[in-house]
Length: 337
Image (cartoon, rainbow, N blue to C red; front, top):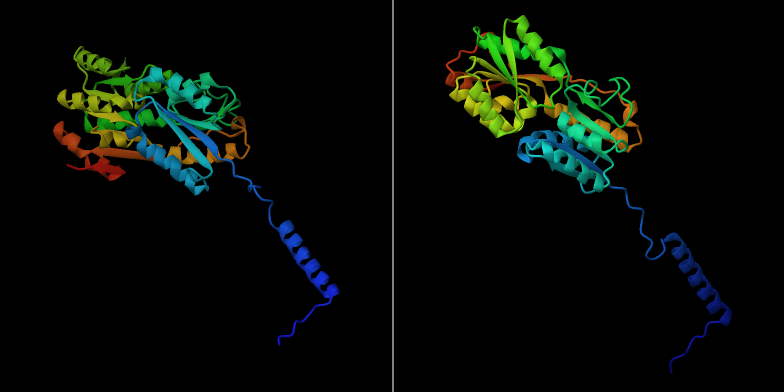
């Protein structure tokens, strides 16, 4: 017959007390049911430019690379709200307003027309200029060292650049005497003046022509025969029309020069200017500092530190031009036949 063992009542009570104590400690150690851990803030970054997404791909990727290097990951601690005007500058104010309705923490904008649209839309949300032709002359900042206000970033106003572009064009076309300068009307007068002064010092006359759309580009080329133009300086602000401009330049046997390296990739003859993707990459540093509490007005505006010189030998061949070997040795980027 099985024997039943009985525990003393005191022992059973002590055991139950121990169990309750352990459970109580566990409840204290674990977070209360349904209490979520704090969620890291996701910062929203606005991004605005006047060109298309396809044309801007290299710059946006450079900006993203800069952010990743600083520990920002899209979808985890940042969101980038990008907006493109596709060459239609009249769309920029509406796009700027749209970004502000999204409650962005900071807006990165370039070039001058995009920056101006955001500036007119807000005096409080921080604005980072990926680059601006001349931020002081444009009224974006009070000075480079002390911007003041809600705008900072990069200035692409380097006086030597205008002269170097004309100089390179003259080296390839020694008989160059009259160049047309295709600009967007919102370009700063300083950029126009510097180009004219630099060209005059080399014995080249410059006629400045404003273009806003494809019809303006067609009209510009039709007027270049009265009087005859033998070279073309193309502003970055008409980048959306580069394919049309390059095509007409080849048909009219006009050598061309512009700023960004991708101008020669698009079929232009020469490019000399800042390394624009580098400016976008460095813009991430401004964004980082602003998101961490810095005031835009206290962050000095920087100028380019990296420049590129590109030559398109295929375009030169189509125009019947020979590139001097000395220029080829200076080039950072050459598009071959």
